[in-house]
Length: 281
Length: 315
Image 1 (cartoon, rainbow over the protein chains, first blue to last red):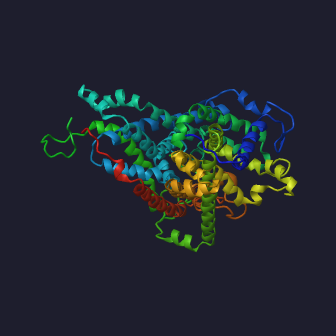
Image 2: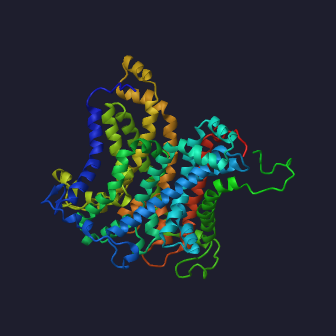
Image 3: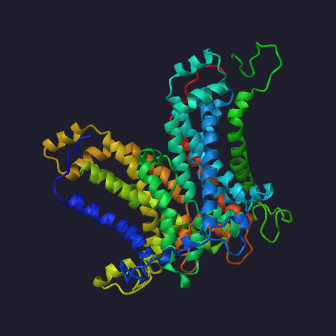
């Protein structure tokens, strides 16, 4: 679109003013992680000491005492958590999305209606019920249990997105494959999945990011220290206001954000489209 | 290939359609276990006195007592007021207001500058909530440390912890800076779809910027505005993560406690150590019902029939 532009500098000035808090917030984060002490945005001397946690010897949760997990345990847990969510979500959404888009079965309409209803349903209101379900299944305090919860809550959105991608593929491709004697399963795997790769990519990046930043579900459902994720660890660092080491907190925070920033830069094209379907805040 | 379930023409015994089973079972199983059963449990538990001390087996059915307690509690009205204040102020000022402002102005400066502004505003949304909350608690900290007090001190604002002195202003700002990007993206794409001729024509006729916004742009994107408003209302009603991470409902008694946070505190984390699953469930029931109502409205708005075209191949 050609920019026809409003006249005068007022729009630019207004935009700068409302963007200023964001720049200050993140500017502070970066400066503080390398500073010995901060007053406002003014650092008093530079140091790499805040990043000392990176020098801790890597151990994994099965080698760790309950009392002393380190940053690598949390990082590893967070990786398992977000990759786990991503893999399950992609598998279940590509199968169910395909079925709703392409297969004719009884109850298809109701299933689609259900997907749309659940898509906008605020699943956070179900915390108490989910808590009891997890206790009952013996999955409380287990990373795997919370992964399943998060996948389920993500499903309606993901199925909906994948259905859209399958819908956009021509029926001729599928007809040809079926006439050639491929089964539905083989057609899905060999023909359709490669064709919806952009959709799979977008959904993966989105799911990975939301899993990586997740706080509430790991916080509530995994009290054990050795299975905690980075977000819960970071929360525990800031919990006691009197003894917060803000140098350390900001360094860990920035470390925690690195994958997000990288993915955001390299996959922004996919994300911008999919965020409009998200349900956060 | 023509195997339709329930097709009476075929005399062979019905077989389980393994294809269909493979494609749908995982999704349906998870949806039942983590959506349907929790909804059902929430309703059931709201009629019991289940809590940490009764455990999952020793509870009693107490009928509507939890609901009566909600009606009688001196805090209910306060929390209801808080919730309305939180939802409608954040929604109008940020999720719709600032979103509109950003969308309109970022599409009318140079393409790259516009993209930069929108990218910047997406940052709070993709930042992990814990990091984002920490940024604000520092931003609003007292004098030698807080960034904001440093900026405001020339204007005679004395050293205070701003988050605890003006909790509502900051709760709304903290949520608003995350919430604005959703509407911003939707409005931006809607505005980009307005044919430029309309705006040029208005400019040729001598319309001012404000007139163009009010008479041309806003009427043409009223449908997206309606969508964002309803969608974000529900989303704000049920979200409490950022409040939990910053003021946790305080300072003092329930100053910034909203309904969803109140339900969470009662059911899963309270100061007295004995969490009341039953009472918390009763509080959640209100939100669950609201959620179902809103979701059904969306289903109607989405124009369901247009979405579901018949598959051209039988299973």
